[in-house]
Amino acid sequence: MAEVTYDQASRVYPGNPPVRAVDKLSLDINDGEFLVLVGPSGSGKSTALRMLAGLEDINEGRILIGGRDVTNVPPKNRDIAMVFQSYALYPHMTVAENMGFALKLRGVSKPQIAAKVKEAAGLLDLEPYLDRKPKALSGGQRQRVAMGRAIVREPSVFLMDEPLSNLDAKLRVETRANIAELQARLGTTTVYVTHDQVEAMTMGHRVAVLKDGQLQQCDTPRTLYDRPANVFVAGFMGSPAMNLLTVPLVADGAQVGETMVPLPRDLLSEAHANGLKQVVFGVRPENIALGGEGIPVKVDLVEELGADSFVHGHGPDGDRIVIRTEAHVHPTSGATVRISVADEKHIHVFNPDTGLRLNASEAVPADAVSIG
Image (cartoon, rainbow, N blue to C red):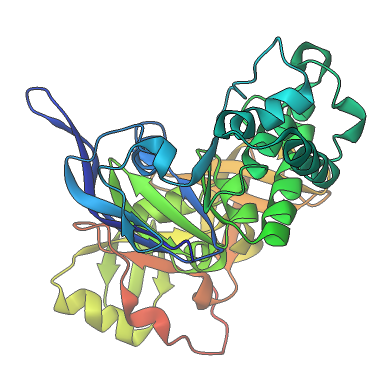
């Protein structure tokens, strides 16, 4: 079994004041799970991965792999294999030699190394390239060699630190699908770091969102998207980002400009019980419809992306609003349009003081509601 546990684990860099790159991280990763650590630059995701690998000290708390405390165990004794962003291949070695090098250091026999390398090469479609050196490979092929080198070691845990960031957009999409498929086939516990939330949403069984070294939320991609725990997760997960407007709270809902947006009664009760005069009102671009008698939006820019279009504009208070529309149904720049939300289940409301989601909206009426 290869469960991974971060138990109040912290990495603190000296300074005045000290920098808590990872701050009391508590996270349980199941055996065979593909978990993605995601967050902006400086969020602590790579540091958390390097702590698990043994490449960064753990100043507080502990880390366990398969129930064994590895906090002070050297990297080579943790039974992990890491795939780096830079591939880290030996340029003077062939693909086969690169993939089998760790086994050679362990004293594994040549026939066993050859068998394991051949098996991994078959999984990664690398058989035609085993005699080539890295300089004769494309970026995607080099990345597959780096993965093959990890696979032949048969570790308890794979660690991947932004392995696709050096690939072009098309190859990145193809390779992330290959990695997810390969992990499902091998069933090896995998911890994967990325700053790309689309990558995180499409690959992970669960996604852990970090900000300033602290865990914001860890859940399935669908739950993170539909039920973000706070304003940061709501704005970070999704492309384009969720529209988030800080607006006054009135008796029956939220006041956006001159338009009152009805909110569920139990959610309003929670907001009033907390003494809130304002709320952060959120709605995703794809849940906004053009037309009706709703909120006026002045269109600044229209991005045509083939299958659909993104309409960028600003609301009555100058707040930036993005609307996702069908490719051939969009207004022109400079026009003023009215927008509405067809169903209140698509409305997200947060406490502006704490940033936390108001949870009374768990119970959502089945009937639709329009803005306006």
